[in-house]
Image (cartoon, rainbow, N blue to C red):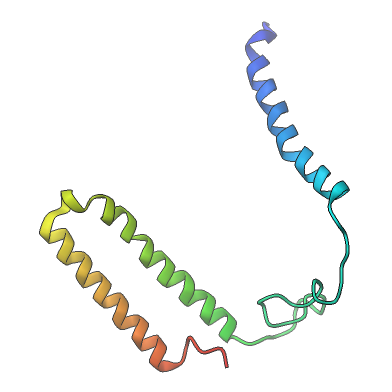
Length: 119
């Protein structure tokens, strides 16, 4: 068995491990560690981070998150369309205009229903 064939793979694994571990260790050793009340406070989730994991909290947080993901994924369809705009022609252009109109109608509906208001 010739181990020279495995040398590039082993070298790749070694370099990958070093590149992944060394910055974390350096950050831990050299980085400042000054926790205060502001750093330990809840961040964008609306509840205390160090309480019971089974506690109930407001469902509006989930609603805003789901709406963000929904609209974000729909907007992601614009990138391939913009790249291929010359190839798809007028039919592709007007199809995307219909898609965007439906997206705007849905956004206005959610806005009017108050789903985007936090309080």
